[in-house]
Length: 137
Image 1 (cartoon, helix red, strand yellow):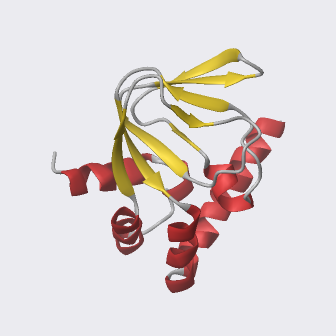
Image 2 (cartoon, one colour; image 1 turned 120 degrees about the vertical axis):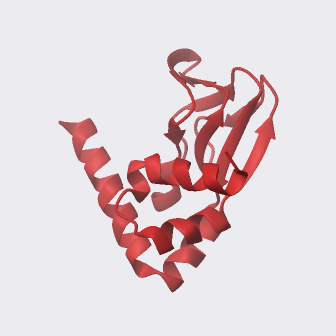
């Protein structure tokens, strides 16, 4: 699969952007970067303010809270959607458990997109609200 096609497929698979139309998905794909990271690299740190949204394209990552492993993420899994919208601190540490390829969308790129396409923001806010609601229930 070509890198551009992989980006589009990953974006379509994420609930945050599930309501976006083809043009919006294409714009998000253009704004996002694919990066390779080594095993053991800390991607985000609990309590820190980093505002990237990340989808795992290849590889895996471990999620810890208070130094206790609470989950493992695999291709198609994602994190950082709430921090992307709220700018709040990370609630967990995520560390690459093996060499991984990640799709990364920064908060600056996201907000720039929403200026041109306000419907992306609406879609993303609805998805985050649903996720927070589901976690609270």
